[in-house]
Amino acid sequence: MKKSFKIILVSLIAGIILLLSLLTKWYLKDKEILSQCPDYKEINQELKKFKGIGPGMVDIPLLINCLNSIVIYKNLEKDVFKYRIFDFKNNYDIAYFNNLNKYKVLGIFLYVINENSEKKYVMDYRIFMDGKLKELSYEDGSIFYRYRKINTQTGEVLVYKNIIEIPESDNVIFSQLESQE
Image 1 (cartoon, rainbow, N blue to C red):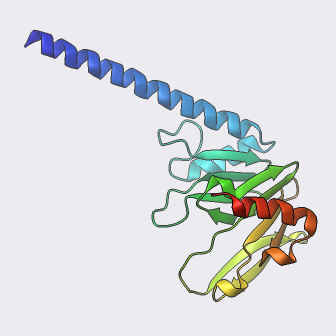
Image 2: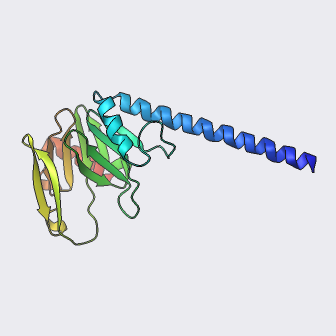
Image 3: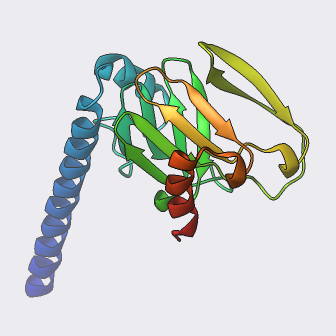
């Protein structure tokens, strides 16, 4: 009985040490990602409003990337997209996607293929264009702006409905993203 108690106690202590090391690693990863942002303190305060997001939270690691005031993170809501791109400066979601291969950063630009839900419904959303937030609406996927090029310094977003309307220089990048699984 004494021997099995010792084995259980040692296993429990080893498990606690492993858990603490993982939490520390996730905390440091989140802090490192956020430190890349000039607006680190402001974004950190905003992130803490969301359940489980931000340095020091005891949740799974959620931050993927931070580019000025643009943050890419794992979505906690169930039955929706896995990842979100959020603009904290203008306070809105830029894009949603399920595969990390659907975004790419080149210089100051972030390219993303925004995923559409299979559901047919009216949805209004905002995009920061021409120096202000513009309201866009669609009733089905036929007018959905799938391709988004985001200037991470200004927050300006260019949107395209289909690949053929994208300028050639950006078309190559979006074509590469489309071909990745």
